[in-house]
Length: 468
Image (cartoon, rainbow, N blue to C red; front, side, top):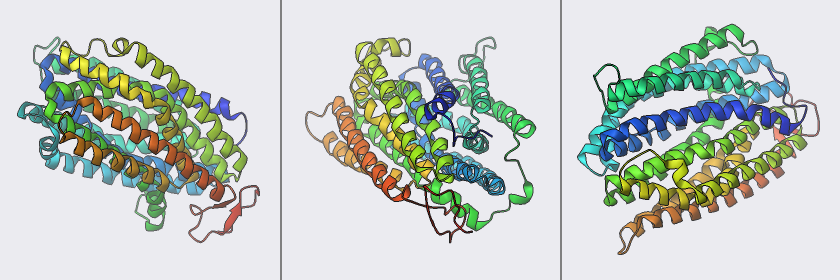
């Protein structure tokens, strides 16, 4: 366990960011590798895999419920030096991870084709996306328990092991992708099914490695089967923090589904170009997101330790770092988009759309970085409802105008991207205002609801704990 309530905040952020970033980038690289090898199968295959990947936002919503709730409550417990509560939260989250994994498998098997029919441009894209999802669902189901373990480690200031496991899993995926997708060395190509299968095998191996590490090395929290039986009060604590954060990813799913819907009339090349551009945008945003994720447990431990000044300082320092990072990548996307997107498709129409998307949408990277930072701070504070509010605002200010514009004469695909910039900027402004309001409330009085549902208010400046 690493104490984040003392020492340089910038040093803590910079120490935690590289492992977090490496783990996230490795996942994104894995997705890009899938797209790279699938691109040889044609635009319909690329569009199908890219559109199917959007379903991951729904699964990520459930993962966020677990991950955010686990990080926030365990970080608060660590700050209070309350190890029994940290262990109880961890084991209740493990029980939830098994339930969510099972639900993912069942829902994926039943709804994959229906989902693809709702957003795909043609029958070939529907088939490709459906096949990919069915083979990819085991990977998503296995991610839940990995999310809980990694979140528990991050809450205690440990991020390197989860990163190493992610990197190794990605290496395995990269090695398997050409073999299973294109039939390298075997002569038996599985196509888009191979892309999903490669991911599922890699995640299974990675999960076993992370589990082995956790059982052997981690000491602050540990598996305790006696605590796996659902305890409603503690499940409610996790869900109170996690559900709004999960709702944020559900809003992203709706947002992306609307994008695919309004550009479907432009054909499979348009959806493929957007899919490639969106994956690359996600990759170059990862450093800023990693900084924000590092700030979350720092803020959480200091909330638990009743140190309001360090919570505010964590926000200021992380916001400055994310802004600098996002400005750098925005300049690169404006000047050399072809450097970022080279090699993903030989189709000129597909790549022209990808270049256009990246050039325009990169203009909102600073705003997106501030959204990342605010979201992580709300998680650290243990109140994620404002995050959901800002995300809902973005969906409505984007979706309704986008659908309306798509019905108007002269509608062009770049209108979709410009509207996205406006909606993202509005969300950033709203997030900053909501965080400022939350600071005024929470950093004057912090209510340790996670310690007791009837806990009394406690001034942050005071080290005294609220009575249980």
